[in-house]
Image (cartoon, rainbow over all chains, first blue to last red; front, top):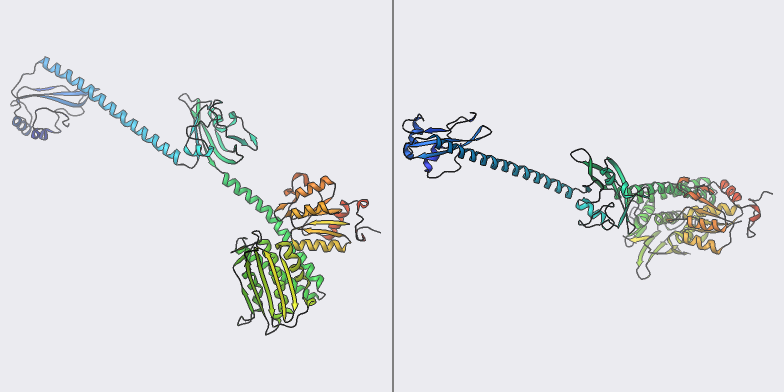
Amino acid sequence: MRFVAWRGLFDAYRRATEGHSPWTPEVKDPQPICIDHVDRADLGASLQATIKAEGIGALAFIPLVTDGRLIGKFMSYYDASHVFTDAEVDLAVAIGRQLGFGVERMRAEEALRQSEARESARAAELRTIMEAVPAVIWIARDPECRVISGNPTSYEFLRLSPADNPSLSAHEDERPGNFEVLVDGRVLAPGELPVQRAARGEQIRNFEHEVRFSDGTSRYLFGNATPLRDAEGDPCGAVAAFVDITARRKAEEQRQLLLAELSHRVKNTLATVISIAQQSFSRNPNVDEARRSFASRIRALAQTHSRLAEANWSGVSFEAMLLDEFSPYFREDGSNVRVSGPPIAFNAKCALTLGMTIHELATNAAKYGALSTKSGSVDVAWQVDAQNQQLRIRWTETGGPTVSPPKRSGFGRLLLERALASDLGGNVQLDFVGDGLKCAIAIPLDEHVARVA
Amino acid sequence: MRILIAEDEFLVGVHLEEDLRSAGCSIVGPFSTLEMATRASRRERFDVAILDINLNGDMVFPLADELSARGIPFIFLTGYISADLPERFRKSPQISKPHDPAVLLKEIQTAVPKADRGRNAVGDAKLDPP
């Protein structure tokens, strides 16, 4: 028992009697206790001393009771002995009863307040979840879904403001007009929409649909809708949660495209290999030589593919292609090959054609040209002609045997004169003079062909 | 017999060209883009077209539709599978890459009835049995 209110009592007295109760807590139906003469009561020595020190001569303990349980007490003190009459006791008991009701009401109000505070906290949690979760959430609170509300993500998704009613079942004036919903290409009527169906009692799961906006763009949603039921168990609304899977669908489409592409690329490559075989064997009556040159050409093709794969098919460095093809011929001191120019990357298709062309030029230089002698050398230099948006490449062989045109492999010329033109839009000038081949190639620096890396 | 070739893989085009030339045909092309092939198809005379499905990223179908409308036969040369072709072309003459020269010649003979073979042909020796 703690003091909660008092008048005219000293602190010392209160401190000394704090917690004292003349009744045990479990006692049923506690009765008032009147002490007419403090001197003559059996209170225990220290309590008696404390009460006397306060100057109290008589006192009454009146229980405050709720539901027959003791919840507190009020006391009245006299500074002299006093005989408590029945009327006084009755009055005190009546006061006690009122106080009891008051305390009970206060406690009930406090309990209600706390319960409401918990409810409120829980609602705030749910609201925070709705706002934080990166999904589209809708709630309909009427079975016809005339009004639907949602979380911020849902309004952003539908490109509406939070003040709008996103329901397609709303009244004509309120209904949103900037989107429609489709499944498998068919526009759904409002009654067929997942929130509306759930509000009629249907549990919708794994529902995928397209939301097509009036500007022609579409996004895709995937998720569930669940009925909300009233106290009788009848559907009175619905809650729906959907995730935007547009990116996932696009990735799927990309994957399918890539798979079809793969088949196409492989077939193309195989057809190219047959063409190279055709070229190798029809131009050379010596079967062994033809076989070696065929294998060598396929290896060069494979090397360009490796370079492409290394760069995720984004392009191949021109310098890397040159060095790859010259590597079997480097003299120890590296003096017979020189390559110089700004970093240029060719895209896949062009890299493959150019790679084969470089292979022919290098192989020919090694068989008949500057790389076939101890003193010969090849210099490949390139530069960007910014004005004409062109890449100019010069291939210069020097110090080799005297050159004359026909010895060169027809395949190399085919690639230089026709393939470069066809695949890269380039043009080529070949000079078979003096001590080495001179070749000038000009390629338009189209973004589809190459870029300055 | 004059044959228009639309093929974006240079060496494959050259290979087709050589195979068909040695069979006595004359060649229009090869063209590596849809635009060039379409322009040439409207400008040149030819009996049949061999069409690669994918020309540097553009699908050849608009040209195929145009040739259909003009009554000029064509044969698809394709790295794709049948199912990847649009419905209307799934039954069109097609051979897969890499091509078998004998099969190619047979398809050409089927596509172009004898009576229609152009007078521009430089000797039909291999295509016309004696």
